[in-house]
Length: 157
Image (cartoon, rainbow, N blue to C red; front, top):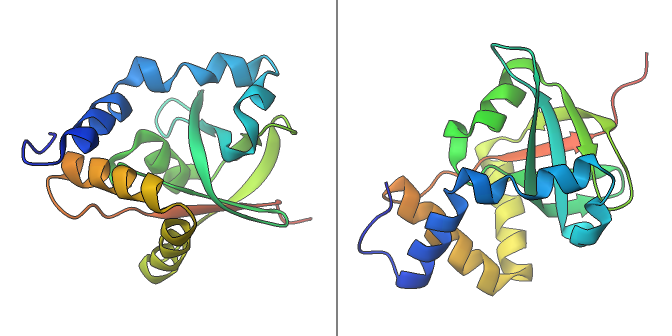
């Protein structure tokens, strides 16, 4: 439910983000090797359905990147299907502008760690953060809890 008292731009962003068909448009591009067209700011996460075991896909913004580490936020909180799937089985393959279907280890950051990563994102991208956070708050009907997921290379052995 999108809060009616949220600023207009935040409500528009919230509606767009809550439109599954629109949000799924980049997936075929990534699956066919054209993820490079979206630059380094996005990643396609292939995960397994927690009930079906079937491959599922989502494209999300990378909010933090270090050497061999990518962090993304679940803007819809713990309700996101992809988030629930990662929590349930921890299986992920990442496709970025330069790499396709790379296996990754999944770690859900603690609330404190998530807050630190999101604060750094907000400092680096104040306008984007203002409207994205506003959209997420609007959808949540209050202060949205936004967990951060960290992907690293799988452990050897």
